[in-house]
Amino acid sequence: MDDQELNFARTILQGRAVSAVGDDEVLREAERLLTGWQAGQLRMERPKLYDHYALVFSALLRKVAALEARLDALEQARADGETK
Image 1 (spheres, rainbow, N blue to C red):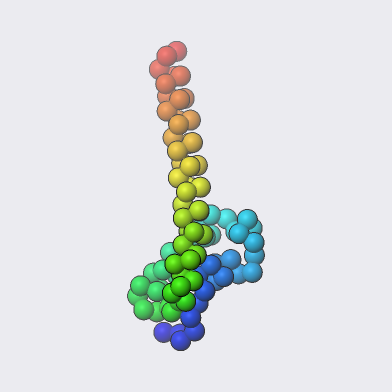
Image 2: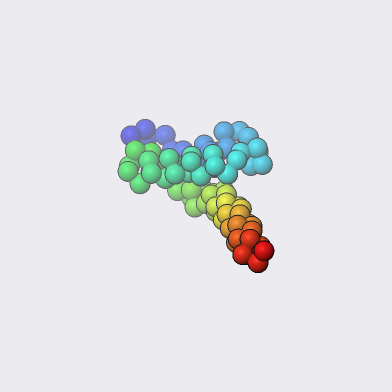
């Protein structure tokens, strides 16, 4: 285990603006960091870890909204197909 404590959001963003990092990358890196943290392989700044959950939650909320929109479109297309 590395003794360096990682800053959760800073590690994911790597100096970029939040808007420059895609949701897929945020989620992939968050999973990697959290898995490493839970396994005791990574150390993180705990106050920062809790403060920066918003980064992951925002990405998840956008993904859910996109999936809901796709589902609605599929259901509408199916309903349109059934009425013809």
